Length: 143
Image (cartoon, rainbow, N blue to C red; front, side, top):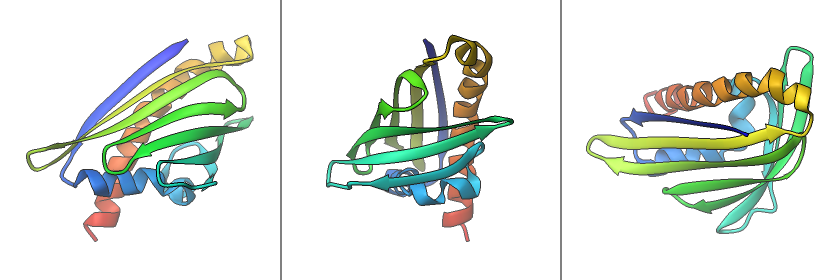
């Protein structure tokens, strides 16, 4: 399994950052390798999501159940897709002057060759993803 984490500080509130992360329809506008994303079956404490990622000739769609604590946490669990296992978590912690964002992901692909080939790239994508949300916050909240 590949485990990765990424953290950053942003000068925005936890609620603002949470809102960006759950606004999945906008992901293709700014998130590297994300070609499509949506959420559905939304309830107060959870929703289901679909995301398609594309890298070179590789294109896969996966589905997750996302459990939420608005403004604080998003826990993501795979329901189907090219992964044998995928769990991730976003944490939004208020700190002086903004928010500490922590993102954790633990995954492996069903196909061993894909896991060996794309696993390291997918790990790097998690770091880039956190940076993409940081840049998105600058665009959305500083304009």
